[in-house]
Length: 250
Image 1 (tube, helix red, strand yellow):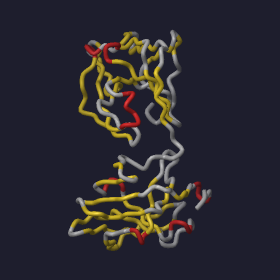
Image 2: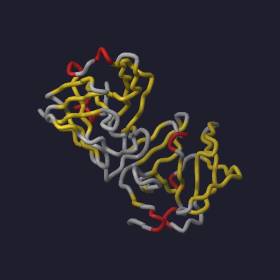
Image 3: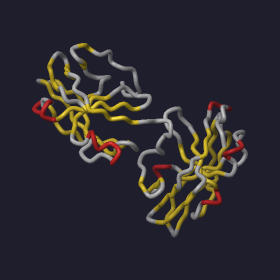
């Protein structure tokens, strides 16, 4: 199955085994998952209807997509556990590759596995790459003229489509200005991040710093380091002020 440019939706077969669970029960087990780019940033899994182990019960609702057409909505039922409206089928889509597939809502399911490893937030994008490189470049971070971090030992994380991120050792960060936040976010490549708010005098800068205490295996090199949003602080790289990038996090 190749790319399909109709409606600017990319559709591509994956060679990974994908399993989905709800309430500890197997909902789907597929060796033929399909990646569908509903948004430009990352794909969604669509699975062959024949690979579902759960029952789909139509609930009378439908959803319309300008590119994918009209979808019938189903409740997903397995061993007495129901996820309402958690499945869609595009039975007569202009993208004919979708007609025999089922879209399970990611967040309505309990667990997703690619091969035997759990995956979080969304499927890994086969066209995204994460490189974490040890560096000796001088990184200095300012907020409103106050230096909050100064390091010659950054780990620089390069991720496709995003600005370079500078992960800094905690001893190089003004931890006296940081207060732990209740915010947590998850990433399928790095794991779950915890955040800090910076307080300078009476002024707060919420959630401008994050770190991964226990990142996923492929991102171990950023464990225990702190990273500042380039979009929200002033970063000097080897003495030169960097332009604040434009990104979804700006």
